[in-house]
Image (cartoon, rainbow over all chains, first blue to last red):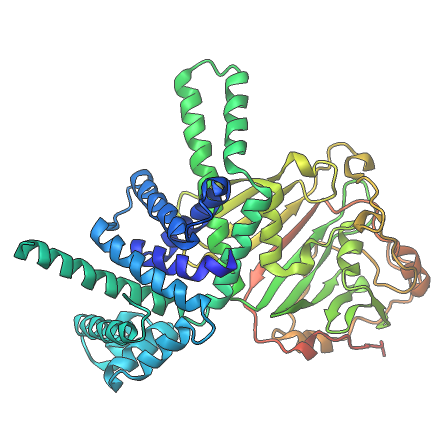
Length: 162
Length: 364
């Protein structure tokens, strides 16, 4: 469980974009995987099987709870490739996904790096950042989006993103 | 491939990139390490001991067998229980994630003696410091009744007790919990995530949300597997619906039988049920419901320095003037768990491991 938890959670979070819902999908996925473990073909990789269960679980939860989150097949296909890259890196001992992410964040121009640091590592909200930097919330959101795009490009060069 | 299809594919790829990086950044938050651990613990506990579907099925069967008569009523019950059960699981997961990131806790505590027992109720407070890779440190200062003030604690060396007269004794780490709650109950030594793990494992859970939406309560009723144990029969956990932090925790034991048999646990060689308490000096197990006059507030150190009241010339009710002798006798501990233990969360300051070491206080 421990070995698969990180890439599974990243996949689920990216799919549902809601931390509380992601926790629910994670727990349900693991329970279903445990119950259906006999169905798993041991000649095939475990990660995609687990993420397939997570995808179906999220769809089921979406129907049951009427939560609004996009699980467009085309997006999920790309997320699956990204999660596979994350899983591959997690299994290797050369470098960790966290190290790669840190490196990519460190390479951001200062104004973008600052937004990422304050929001994700300083525990601040977008409105707090907007207030502190005298920028509007929309401006902060755009800066954040651009920063994530730069990080994505950087992670792609490192092989973490497909 | 048409231009539209290409555009859609590019858009999906861009959205996926953004979402995945966002997920990685979420995972890099400082609290995520503890949350991840809690997630795994809950998942393992669910796999190991709980089968929510089986519980729901049993309840549905019960509803039908109970002859409720109306199909609609049965369906409504099934939907209610299923929703409640799933919701309880989610709440436990979120509380575990929230509490795993908290290392310093303080609770005001009240222990109500079992019915028909001469012990007064106890009131005091517990400070608790969770440590990665080690057992939690704690300090339970019993302030009321004033003539029986004493303390229990766990520091890096193990358990300790400080009598009303300030005499410090060393015990096993789990000893204080066993003495207070009856033989073998060490529910309190694991800090909140440990307690919640146990609740998730051995109890049937339902949730109640008050009308104002200000509080969510998890009601845990001991499952069939625990009927012959001394674990609490019911646990109520009041949770802040926004932060998922535990505000209040109430452990209750059935008192109706008036017999100790209800709490008889099967003997387990070498296990908790078989544990014998060491004889020797230990704090008296007595307490009172009266609130004390306002005292100093702050960290454990402040309360530690508060000296116990000097012994009066006459013994109080049920108190032997030969305190040491009383403590020897009472170190046998209560025969039954208390009727109820209530923990009210209060803001905690930052604790240091040194705050949890015993301090000998002699009355002057």
